[in-house]
Each structure stands twice: as C-alpha cells, then as structure tokens.
Image 1 (cartoon, rainbow, N blue to C red):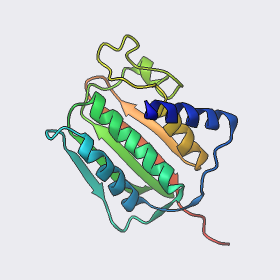
Image 2 (cartoon, rainbow, N blue to C red):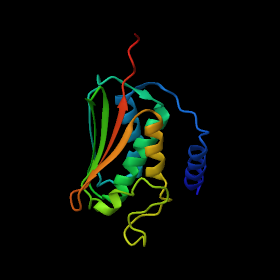
Image 3 (spheres, rainbow, N blue to C red):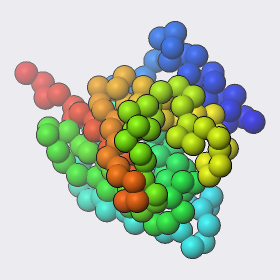
Image 4 (tube, helix red, strand yellow):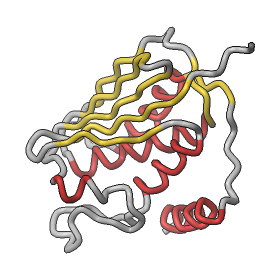
Length: 175
C-alpha cells in the first residue's frame, strides 16, 4: 500500500512540475550494483541477475537516488513479468552512458510498446497474467530519466523478451 501511495504522490509531483532532481555526477557502476543488491532479496532463488558493468565506466549526469529508483523499477518489472534470467549492463555510448535491463520473458506486443510508458497503462488490462501494480512505474521512470536529460526506450518482440534502455548524458566539460 505504501508503494502505491508513493507512486501516486510522485506522479502528482511530476505532473505539477514540483519535483527537483539533482544534476550531479552519478557513479553508474555503483548505482547499478546498488539497484541489483536492493532487488536480489526479493527475487525467487531460481531467478538470476547477470551484471556486466565495467567498474571504470565513469559517471553520468543525473540524480543518483532517482537513477537507482528507475533501475529498481525496471528490475522489479523484469522479475514479475519475465520469470527468467535478467541481464543488466552498462556501456559508453553516444557521448553518454547506456544502461540496459533485459529479460527473456514473453516480450511486449507492438500495440503495447506504443503505450507502455503512459500513466496507468497495463499491457494486460484484464490482469490475466500480470502481477499487481499501479501502471505508474514506467511512466515515472521515463519522466525521471527525461528530466535528468536522458532517454528511456524499449526494444521488444513477442516471444523474445524485453530490453529497457536508459541513456544518460555524461557531465559537460568546462569550456
């Protein structure tokens, strides 16, 4: 119940523009490992998370706590919907850092991919197969990432799992 309340309050803050995010250096390797560490106790023993992050990948610009919140949400979704191994990786890309959370689950239909980041949208509206939730997690995650100057996208094909991609900028160099 507290998670639902927190998500509704955070959504309200985002919608009103009342949420202040830091724009500071984020140690990506540390944040990824911290998010995985947070999620491991909540996973069934049979589910594995593979982490591929170079300790020297460096920093991105953002709000460390909010980046971790986004990653925990993506890992939580992968564990609920995929039921199989999860792979988290981070790499330098296009002047920033790309973090991916990939699962080997059922994937997401094309019609749902277009709407998955909308408020309250659930890919399985009858909840036949989906776990409980508010339908706000991906909306919140995308809003947070975009407000940190990044992007959150999805690549998925039915039957081939889903890969969520978080791209964050690197700090600007002083001129």
